[in-house]
Length: 324
Image 1 (tube, rainbow, N blue to C red):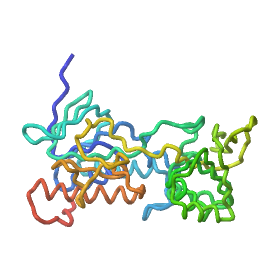
Image 2: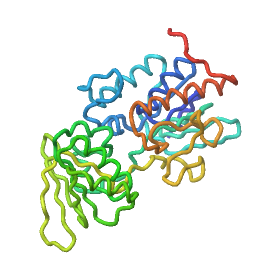
Image 3: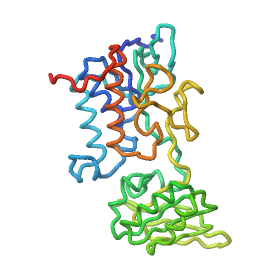
Image 4: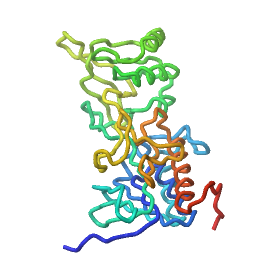
């Protein structure tokens, strides 16, 4: 068996979503040898979004997959090397200061490392969830709520995120069915505000059993009230799930390799650098409440400019690079 290829680069970016691709675009334009390592371009939060309605300058008919392809192709055009591969281990500290990234095919030795793997690290909780993900099942009301004007939707969850997202959906949906199986953990005033909305119906002590649908997407959900034998069917077109919450994807990092917050998000400074010098984190892996494409892209831009400044030992940022 041949030993894996060893590749030296200036910047290694783990994750090919909007944050990673934007970062790669900027670092490549800064003449930094950049490699993007992407596990699967079809499964990220942007890739499974059916339509993009709130990214500046993009037609609302464009799918998330199409936008992501454009971002990736643009980075490649400026010199980014894109590899579809699985990262299974990272060394954030080495003897010569390089960051070491291990994949089955090659080992990458980078001067700077960018973590951009997102926050989709949660297994499907309900039957039908994975089948209709991106086809009516969503984890982000801010992203997809506007698609459900005058529609019936379900929100599942008892945490503060579920309360906030359900409140957001009241601006669009005809009825928001709030399904709660146990005690709500959100702020009391927020829950009172939500329940004060005329278009909210709370299903208390109720468990969601299954998400139903057809080729067009979600058509309803099955629920079961505590103490009742029969299941009930709710006709909804959208199902927003916050039962387990999104989880930053960090399984390739050893415990304690970079600082994380209580929710598992990677902690960074204003320049997107972690507590380990030369290691940056961008996008949803930071687990901020603003999980939007434009925010992820902004993170990528900030990190790239910070990396260029850091690698070249400058004290100030280079605002832009000359077009070639």
